[in-house]
Length: 180
Image (cartoon, rainbow, N blue to C red; front, side, top):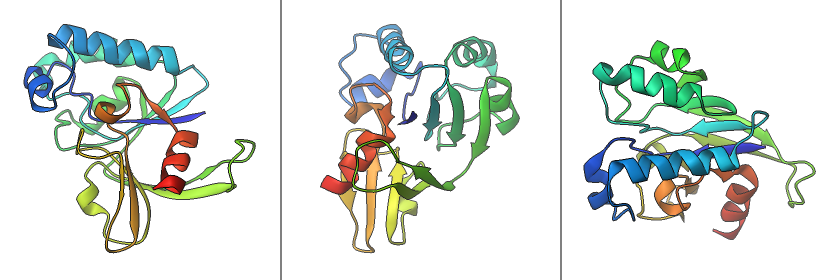
């Protein structure tokens, strides 16, 4: 199965207050996000991270090597504005690919949906959605789950703040798009 997630902000104490996250501290937040990921994602799954894994700098690389290498699934990253490590570091910690944006088509056959495939733009910041189509993003935390723009773009926010701190499947994304 294909999944999406964004805006983890691991070890970012102030994000708890900024986004009214239901955690007492960063330990509880990190633990919940990582546990829900591992409960949802299997080794055969593919996950697109749409930015802002952490706001930490290169001085904390060792911690993130163990965290991300331990996560199941084939992982792809679309960089966010707070992803400060060099792109090759993300490869070292288990990401198969690193992008600034990505356009791809997902097959939806055998999912019980009314469409067989969907062409999507994967970005971190929804401000880049300046043309018609389906856009999957993060960046905006708990402001909205999906929306349509004046230029004909349909956007779905896969940030953890609106998906109960759990990765969201392509099937859920398409259901959100069709209902949006």
